[in-house]
Length: 245
Image (cartoon, rainbow, N blue to C red; front, side, top):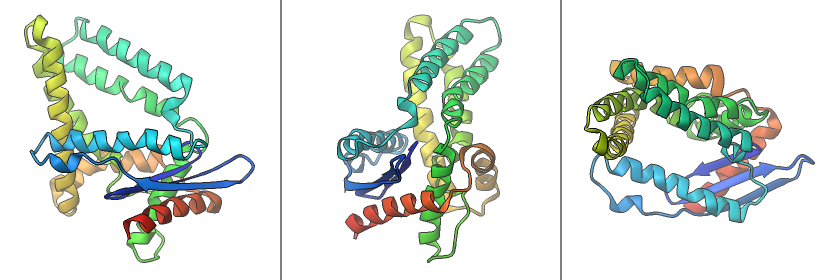
């Protein structure tokens, strides 16, 4: 988050934020859970992502001081402009693959804009250091983490490109439905690949697929946190762990 960290566990969440005056606020609770009932490959991935987003309103109610970067007006405006730009690109005369590749790159603009706000990359790094240090039994972890959602970037770009190119070949009346189904399948396939990557981290293909995400973390989406930011991340982690125990 812009001013803190939200940690997800299997059944619970913990969050901590720091006000400008230095006050630390901590909250935790049970996660909305519905993805457990879906075990079908490809479908369970989107369900898990939906479950992760469903916790955000719960966090806001329990921790009104939390500030999410995508709630900023400038970022919301960038999301709208990106959607419009994607539609215009798909109507252009360039090749199908070129259109979808450009639209995929354009979709990264809101995230890049959000990362310009001070604190977000540092708190992202603090989250990784805190969780990784816990997993290493106290040995300080780096700011890059192999289970970060950025690891989905490589599989998601590839699967989305293939799905949208296929959807663009559908008859015009059915193209919207084809894109929806293709996007759902692309997200589901990406989550399945992501899970496989975590089970086989030493596999050459897993290393190749994770490289874009690692580079994204290393160069752009994370920064070294301050001790105060790491304290916030540890508070969120510990609040989540207390409920999981």
